[in-house]
Amino acid sequence: MLKKIQSFSFLLLAFLLLVCGTAVHAADDTETHLGYQEGGGITIKPLDPLGPEPTKPVEPIDPTDPLGPPAGTGGSLSLDFASSFQFGNQAITTSNRTYYALAQEYTDFDGIKKTGPNYVQVSDVRGTGKGWQLSVKQNGQFQTAAAQELSGAELVLKNGEMVSNLSSTYAPTATDTITLPLSTEIDVINAETDKGIGTWLYRFGSDETSGGNSVQLTVPGKAVKYAKQYQTSLTWSLKNVP
Image (cartoon, rainbow, N blue to C red):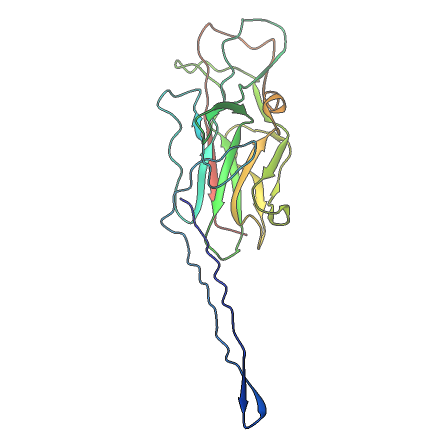
């Protein structure tokens, strides 16, 4: 949802009156008011990770779900979008390996398909400046549908940075590199008072190239590997605390 702000200016005219040969200045003052209210009913769509512009939302492609990414939480403090990570199909090996998640694919406002860094988007339109926190938890180890774990696998998110159409003065503090522990929630963004206002993207990398190298999965060579699909899930939690 877009909020359009219109500014109105009034031209006050001062009239010079001549009364009995004496100059008299007559003037009057008018007041101009503009009020905002909390955007409680707003659902903000995902924005372009290469250059977020609120008037030009995008349509991300979820590499793990052909139906597309789930809808955001909505509300005046909302988690609008979080990328899913796809590491593709790899050959079984007994050597240590590092795999990189595919960059985020999306269709921009003009209908053009693009690729950029994976990202998480948060919007704060409460109008209070109270701040917020974002945390993430990896819900267990990568495993098959038969619960066969990929022992020792480690997920790392690198080159984390905040981007918005707002001034960097209002940017929250974000963790640059996240090494995800198993089944443990960790804080990754802290928006103190008067920070994180508006819509902010926590992106991993600044473009398609760096984004393609910023979400990595390391797997030990000694880990037993089956010719099956392995998966886990991440829970992103947005908290209404400074």
